Image 1: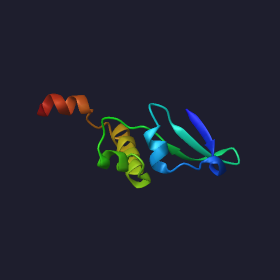
Image 2: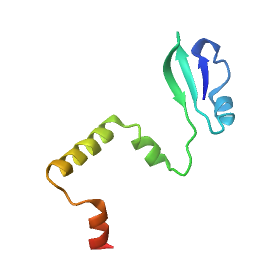
Image 3: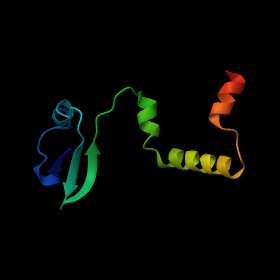
Image 4: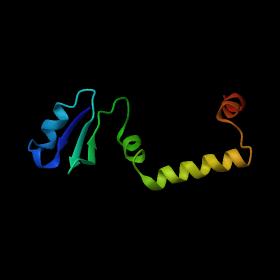
Length: 83
């Protein structure tokens, strides 16, 4: 992981992205993280977008909590039933 202070981040986003490799780049402001540039593999635009969408994540969390509380059918069982 590479850390750079925002005031020192003078390269373009494209330049940072070209150098990202397999490590994250964390941008800080006065030593506190404010942004991250992370490599992603084996994903599409929709997955990347939804993985950072707070409303979608909250919906998934509510759904999981509901399934646990109501003894929902585990995904393994659904796969067995519907192939």
